[in-house]
Image 1 (cartoon, rainbow, N blue to C red):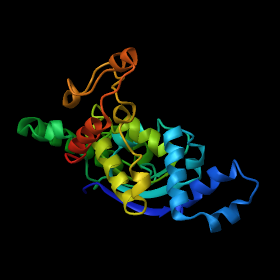
Image 2 (cartoon, rainbow, N blue to C red):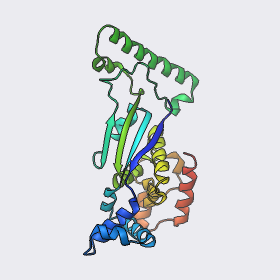
Image 3 (cartoon, rainbow, N blue to C red):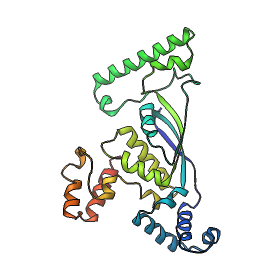
Amino acid sequence: MPMAVQLLSFTPDPELLMAAAAHLCYRDVSAVELLDVLAPHDVGRLIDIIFESGHLSVAEHVSFTFAIDGVSRVLTHQLVRHRVGIAISQQSQRFTNVAAAGYVTPPTIEKDPDASAAYAAGVQQALALYELLQSKGVPNEDARYVLPQAIETRLVLTLNMRELIHIYSMDACLRSQAELRQLLARIRAAIRTVSPRLARELRIKCFRAGYCDETRMCIELKGRMPRKDEVIGSRQRLPSKYYERLEAELDSAL
């Protein structure tokens, strides 16, 4: 099945909640009262201050929950490397029979007909062995040892906004795997439907910092994005409009 990402639930009025939490830290007043009296322009101003200052603890009060289907276990293995502000409930291969499950083919394999055919044959061979073991009475929890990581899975994913900003900044990097980048692009699109302002904070780290700090720069930005030592050493960033144009160009390609 194709990848599917659906926003199941989210914190109501997330920007208002963040603004009230931030304002509370400097006022002797209940958050209940702040939620009633903060005007939209005050909320917008406070949200800008929160993100510009980097004081993101209040973003932890906001969370989003997604239903995700049709992704590989390669992808979910990368998600579980993030440990704070994230919750994952995943389809179990121990209790479900995945003999009829689909599988994910990376673009680098899909574009080569010979590689794609060999890849498909290898996956089908593994699935055939899985079913053979089941027919011999081997339980799913043991038969699954032969399954490739390409097998599709399903999960429910919950993230607070602060962790989501961190994950996006790291894993939407153009050096990340295409499947993970595609997932994050769909998550951002889903958040944009309920809070365009918060969705704007989901940015690759180099665009936020104004430089690349990776050992190897991605091909797409080589010669176009300064390296960390070039910016830190000179104490100068390129104009903000330059980064905005470059970011918009790459976003349109997702």
